[in-house]
Length: 88
Image: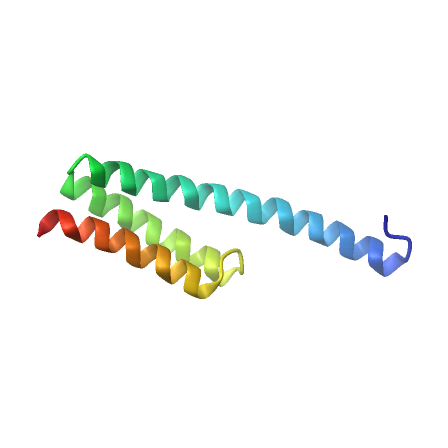
């Protein structure tokens, strides 16, 4: 356990960030699962709409540092590829 004043403060900040990051990650994972599920059902419009909601959420999570920039880019790319495969 932290004993210095600055270490105690940093510990509190870390806990706040951990909780926030976990919440954001959970929301993004849910959106990704939604896109995959709708795409697997072969619903073109639904999957495009779900993707349109998921992309900004993933980008925002990357901007806040929850995901690495390239990790977010890879997630977006794979989802887009999956959705585009339906219209081909």
